[in-house]
Structures are given as structure tokens and as C-alpha cells.
Length: 139
Image (cartoon, rainbow, N blue to C red; front, side):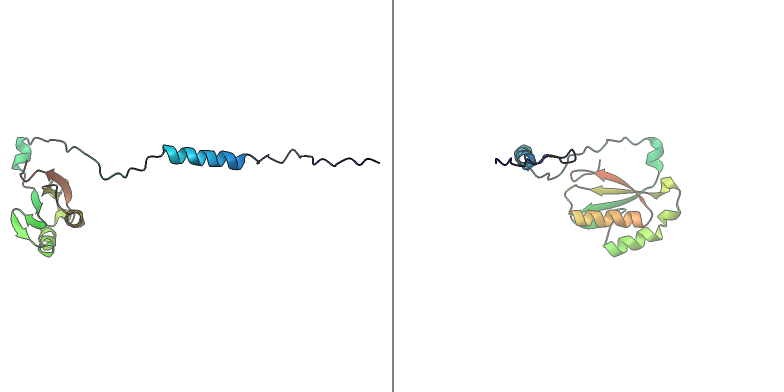
């Protein structure tokens, strides 16, 4: 007698996955080929140009300068510890909002660590930072 080969019946629950590996491999190759591997080194941003009106010129804001890793407050050279002591003595956190403004001037070529230390010091002492940038000169 002739025996019939038993056919494997697929149940309705089974999903055919035989070509899944091929599709995944093709998708992987596609994304590898279309992905850009260029590293972003920075971003450009434009500082808004502001004009001072007469009311702003009469206000006395604290000016902190950072040039060549040296800190100045109101054009007087300070170390980081002296700057912290002076900013805390000004009690910026107890002033009204307009009196808390600290203008941070920089040439834009400062080390990130120095800039970040000064910026965080101003904020820790209760100041609101206004950034003024220039290429070696105040605007």
C-alpha cells in the first residue's frame, strides 16, 4: 500500500516568518547606506541686536566681564572666589526683578569651563544673566 505523506497544516495562529530575516537585513543595509555619519561640531546662533533707550541707560546693572580666563566685576579684576563674595554681598536675590540683571560680557573665545563657572555663579547668587558678546569690544 501506498502511504501518503502527512502534510503539515498551518494553523491560523501561525505567522510565516521565513522571509523576515531577509527583510530585516535589507532594511539594515538601507539605513546604513542612507545615514549620514557627519558629527555636529556646533551651531550658529545670532544674538539679537538691542538698542538702549534712555530708561535703560540710567539703570545701573552689574557688569561681569570674562576675557582670557580673567573675571572682572564693574571693570575691577577678581578671582572666582572674590567674584562670588562680591556677588553675594550685592544680595541680588533680594532685589526687584529689574535690579537682578547681571550683564555678562565675553569675547566669545573663552573656554567653556570658565564661561560655565561664571554663568552658574551669577545664577547661584540670584542674578538674571544678560549676555553681551563682542569681538574684543563692547557693543
